Image (cartoon, rainbow, N blue to C red; front, side, top):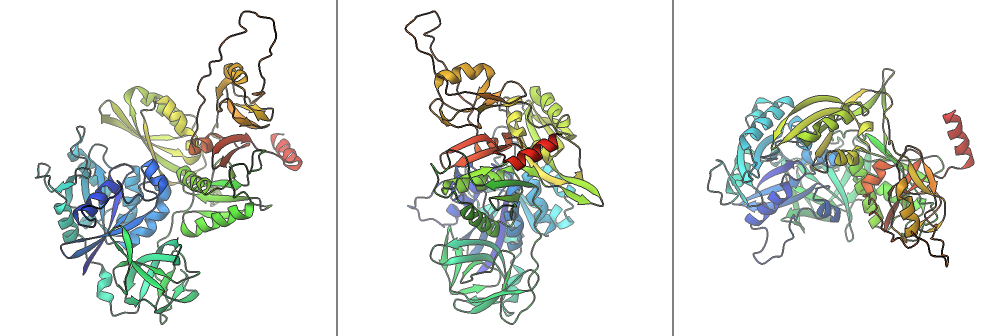
Length: 606
């Protein structure tokens, strides 16, 4: 069967996974009476809850005797490690752009990787049926984006379609019949080349492993595209590292291929197809699986380096062990090492003492998703404030810079620019009207300046602003950046919070806890209205007497507490604070310092 391998690229919430749903339906991948979940490709619980794609996944459809392998790529730069590996498996990309918003930062990130690999793009202007859609402007912006990313002449001469993924149609003309996605299927078959590997069927077998996962029945499994030759179930192959070292020799126990949303066992893997192999015990991502006669590995795509690090430690608070079952440092280390093996964008290193582990990755969202997965698995952790990873070149200290694109109501643009370019040391590069009373601001801001900024941004824009960020490059260190301005309210007692005490503390600042919540000495229960930390007693009850006086029977009316998400809590804390994460709770607390650490901190402070 003739093959086409394509990836779908889009910014978060531009309709990529919805379009794949329609491609699956219209190709006949589902039975007529089959119950299919919305956004079928987002199989992970967190993906469904947040409406974002985190893991790159493949599917396969048949259309008019042609097999089309479709790879759904994450739209967020934090999960770029998935993107860089997966693009090496395809021969063309479908770039999906919201006709109202135009190309956004994460579109730029993934597209730059695809164009650098020489892949042929097809542009689909999605959501053209929305009232604020401007497809012509969006198309011009896509061309400008390609030109700025040094696309070659063939890539700049891209075909485009107008579509509505939700309504399930794509047409060459804006006022076309709007019936189905036939125009998109035809364009993929016509514009994307057949895999060049199909001509190499007679050569020895070679495959580059791009994703690693585990199956409860098959064990360790690796997915990739067959670069040359064929492979039958039961044959013996070997795994080579990037440097050509032999890792292991193993017998292929199972070959799986994508058929619709499921993987089915096949007897023969052919050059050009995307398949999954089982039977290995050591081979991992970026290794070459090949015939026993070969000694040269396939070139693997380099992965962008991590930009932030977070320390994962055991939960040593007084409430430790009440919610989770996995609390030992050994168990936490095993889980992190497993994650680092599957996710090549993450690096894990042990800290002195062995009780904590430094995890380096792409961004706060990637770290937040990893921590969220671990807490759902029953882990209890303490998490430090994210630290930016610095480089040194020619004696000069460099730090990561991010390109921030903000769409905000005109009334709040001034406040946003003032915050970014003032205390956060950003540089404004572009500011233009975005229509409908909104302004688009583009600025280059140090990654350090963006840690903890999102909550402040939502407050400044009354929740109406949209902020997107992407790694831009490295630049000379810009000096000290002011952290959180407010101090915190710290519990001085162990016990259960009392409504009367919290009511009396409301003058001091905003609360993070509810009455009847368990608290302990050193736990952060609120934000102080001033810039210093304050120890308070949330257990202090009302003194009862038999003397009645005015004001004695005032009703206790509490302001609802600030409920922080996991990412907000991690971004909020200061260097001397930790986030305590359990399956049922996210708490903030002061870091416990042993006497030696106290002396070191005192010496640092002078």
